[in-house]
Length: 479
Image 1 (cartoon, rainbow, N blue to C red):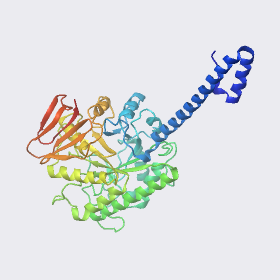
Image 2 (tube, helix red, strand yellow; image 1 turned 120 degrees about the vertical axis):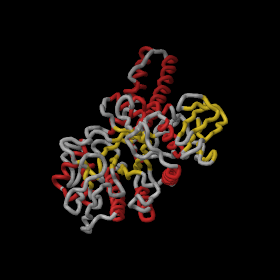
Image 3 (cartoon, one colour; image 1 turned 180 degrees about the vertical axis):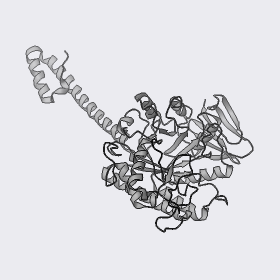
Image 4 (tube, rainbow, N blue to C red; image 1 turned 90 degrees about the vertical axis):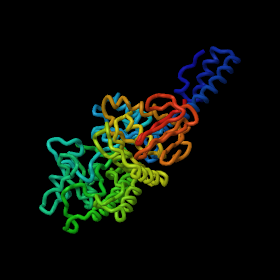
């Protein structure tokens, strides 16, 4: 006999119903057997239902709890990819990203973070993008429609937020050929305007129909591009507070104040919201290189300030990991051995001491020799959450479809320890399912004896040893 509706009635009602049925239709032995069967079925169903509910609630909590700052769920692939929102945000494109990217940034102002996170278990953060240290003023169209909304508002209502030179002209960035005006990050009102606009609250909020704000859009934070520690212009701006030419050291000190203030305001908004909202600055390019006579800033007066700034935020981006920032992705210029060592030492110190999370941009076309050098260097130092941001971006075909291959070719499991020198200036790190090897030298090969058979992901060949020429790396997975 099949009894239906057990889950929809209480246990007492079920017994009454069962007894009534049994009284008229069943013998007592049959009734007792059915009764015991139903009792244990209900107990098991209730337990399973409760466990399922708890599991679902835990899953939802984990998927939306950005404050945990956990890496992606694919333990065999340790790479945390930082992906640009697709050019065509169709469900199938977003699903590819959500299943392969730990972060999706530069989302549309009409996007909803909760929906994006529901499409895949890998994605943890959905991030809005807007410039901070400079803004594009290039009507009728800039690269970022959301940024244009803010830039147009600033230009009309608060032109005092834009730095000017001694002649009263707006100071223009030396990046690219567009009108990018340098903003006065030393002005606390500008910083507040940026935060108000991003959250769509306060006196600097935009109209709600233009942008609902980070919280209503269920996003996890904001990426503040061009939060540069130095003056990025061929013009010398006037310091609005001293009315004199802005010195490099003054600007860097104002940068530190700005970074700390932005972190404070985002923490305050996070506390009010009851969940973590990240402020993630892009702090500029290659400042960890030797400060020689060609640089206006000297390490003795600046490096400690920058160290303090990047250690105070939750996460920050460094442009140009391993290679100089360039748009020549087929032939990027690698740093010297000394510069490579400084990069590795700086980032390792940040990660080991859990000061903040780092986003590393690797300017190299996917799956070229340059890519393998960059990604192997990344895997040498991977610790906790460390982001790899591909350049060129992976926001459209055919690069979008290559995202799964990034994880497939880095299925290394977990690190067995820190990296070490297999021989002078030849670096290796062992993983539970493979090895990564890097030759950062300016000249001279590196030969690594692997002690077993491994598949070189660069060419698919099985090797027991491998020789790398300068500025080359390899990811090797156990046969």
